[in-house]
Length: 232
Image 1 (cartoon, helix red, strand yellow):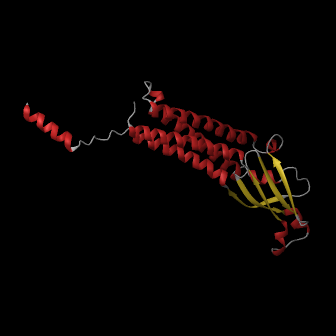
Image 2 (image 1 turned 135 degrees about the vertical axis):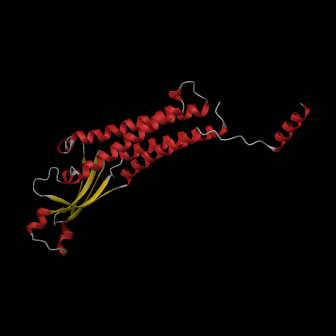
Image 3 (image 1 turned 45 degrees about the vertical axis):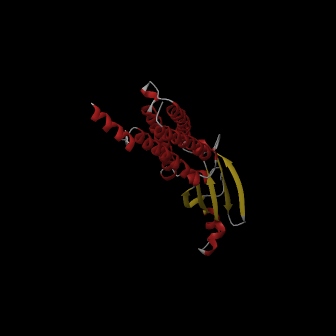
């Protein structure tokens, strides 16, 4: 049976692994990875809008991995619309990269659950196989954190290098052209970053659990040992 200190650390690590699982699932299901401001360039050019008048042509957009929405401002008031990434819009994006991001996060979800199970196992008993012990827990946490980091990096590449926001804003826009004035990463993106951080914390906890701290003898024990030494 593991000691009380190790039990506590592995129990804490299991909670952190489960928290990581929740964070990823919430992030994947919420359309708030990116928000931005979009300018209806066609409408602004038609009326030769000056700086004060450009406000009438600036709308908003937000999206996640599966759906999103936008407010089109083309001089006639704001028009709200919602969209889904699958099955049609994804064909106009970098399909391989977008699907890869989702796959990375799905793998990370599975690995977080595996890490959760292994932490529970180590909190209950000492496994006889190394892969089920602290080494295995470290492996699953390292892999889970790595896949989340890959997903986050890939999403940043899609936004900055492949102009993801602009492609989404102009999807099925036959008349108007939109340009991106501002874009920023939102809560769901940072939830994934936090999830990767939790696995790094788990690695630290497992490393601490392997430290053999010296046992502190009580005064009573020291007195008994001294008495026995005198007798012999």
